[in-house]
Image 1 (tube, rainbow, N blue to C red):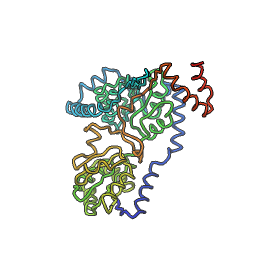
Image 2: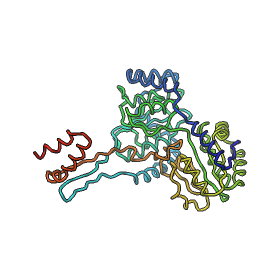
Image 3: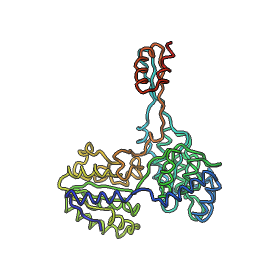
Image 4: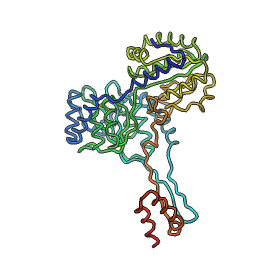
Length: 428
């Protein structure tokens, strides 16, 4: 079961090294397969995409592009409670992300110069949504809503068919509610390549977002530069900081909520209370017995989970900042006191009732978060992920005359005489 580690400057360091090795470099065999798929799709277009779909999924889907009336029918036929749940989530996600919008600006100076910034949304964005048993309507919401708020003109969604060749109706419901423009039944690296290069039917996009398996993630990584991507996501992770006031039932449940994602997922409790540590272990064993994905949870906790026992809360805060987790829960007494000291985390959950799934589905902040310690320098997906900026400059003749000597001096220091000349000729 989940191991206990006492902070001593050695054991916790070894554990964090083990976590770093968990992600590692992209598998060379996977990269070779994905490179071949990318090259074939780039040359063969839709025919290549469909051939790979038939090869990997066993049959061609019912549709290549899902007709709009099929999406509308999915909405009409959906469980009303499910639709209402999604609508409530959409309201919260929209409200939060509306506050992230960047603004264009113009700065007019006294000498007549005009400087400014123009902000607008990307033209086309590709949204990858996993299918089958790993279908997440919530991911449609978290990716499509900020894109729409940013002003993206067209969202193209790709998603694998179910085994019978039909689309996942829950995914179509989410797509319909969020205003996704077009939906194609294709998955895997071939769908990523189609979005990056464009085919006869699938438009070339400016950015690809959304989760996927190792082949999807590798394709996104290899195509970065041809197209922008959201991030290269690693296994899911949660770190819970808790003291003696925390309820072990809550702690155990939240640790397992991430462990069930993937055998490589990491769930860590950092605590100052050994009593809580032991009670949490007992709760994990009790609750795991009735959870459907208990085999995945057990493997994840045994190999990549830990309970780290610290001497002080300050030590626990330092541990969290060092780990830079995707999800960070603070189950200390008076958790709001610690927000200012927590520098490295994708999303921070404060208090006993801010359980991590609240962020996955409902509260409003985005659930597409940096993993594998990259929260030290990456941020969650948001509206600005779908924006592009251009600056603009207008100078009068007199203003340039005042600045010309400085510009020419710096240009000549850099050996760029053509730069200097472009300024000089205007005053000869």
